[in-house]
Image (cartoon, rainbow, N blue to C red; front, side, top):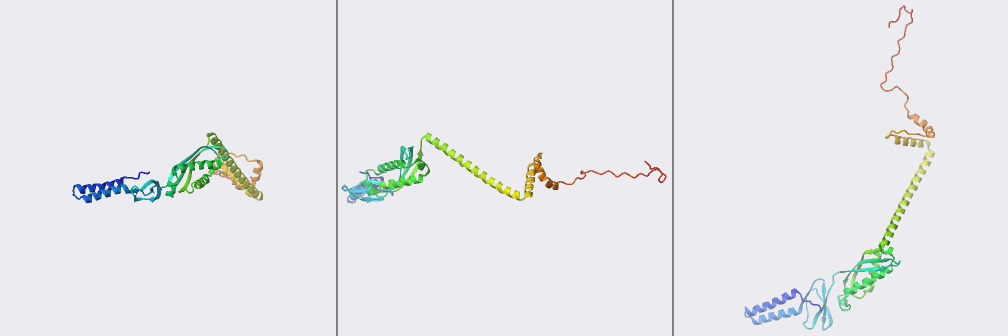
Length: 307
């Protein structure tokens, strides 16, 4: 039987008993004091309390008499007794399965958390010997069944589906137990270290393959753009010459390097470059010399030019 005495009931009973004793010895009111003492004893035997989340299962002469609580409730002395108090809050149970084979013969260890609560207090208390232990055992066996029916890749990649599968299996097994609000969360899946290394290398190789495919796709796109540009240049040679000049300018504008241009390219650019070459002229700051003075031949005018 569950011991349902608590401090509140004890304090209430002792208060009435002490008040009755005080009435007898100090006030000399014996009948009132005796009545208060009797009330205190009766309250101590009949009054019980339950917390907000607790429900008391009452047996009357060995048969189920009801569920009482929360708060204050009364018992019939010598006829009724509290069999157990059931916690109706949502509870969690840790379940684990060690070294269990998956559907593809891989040994794994899985840890999960089961959330549940008591929905039907009468069934959980009177039809199950230990509902907490039974729920944990059913959850553990269900977890092993789910692992055995699932491949390793599914356990690692589709945990939500595995949670739903395990939750449905536990619900079917606990149907009629008075247990509800069942939910399962997988905490961790451990695999052998050598298999973990192999999966890591496989994942790395897959990432490298994806990178190479992406690079090849980029090369194809670039080649397609170059092919489209070649058609434009083939239809318009002037555009090709302008593009060539732009490339040469871009390569030479910062470094000032000497660029060797093939003869064919030079001939193709000859007429275009000639348009950009300024005509030859005197260098800046150059002053042309004065023209020579004319000399008069001797005998012309009868004089010799002075030097």
